[in-house]
Image (cartoon, rainbow, N blue to C red; front, side, top):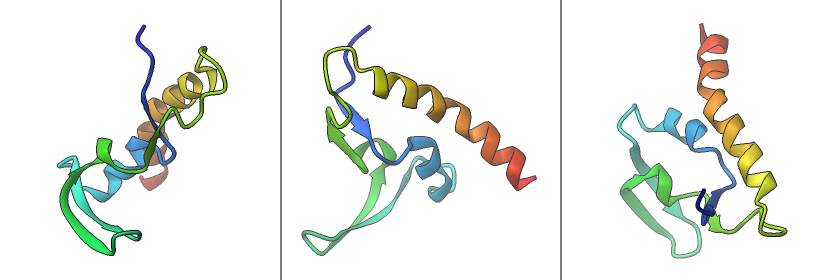
Length: 79
């Protein structure tokens, strides 16, 4: 399995709730003070190797599993 490079500190499944199902949304970059339109969820709220403590990426792997389960929990809660 390849090593995850971009590690999200906001789960992609959570961000998807703000896109209207199109996988793109608008954002505001606080550092540059610019609006960004049509940006993909894979391009925001991530840093390279954010959770890495060693080569195992154990934290990233566990969070990725939770991210995959989150839409089911969210949908059940909404209903």
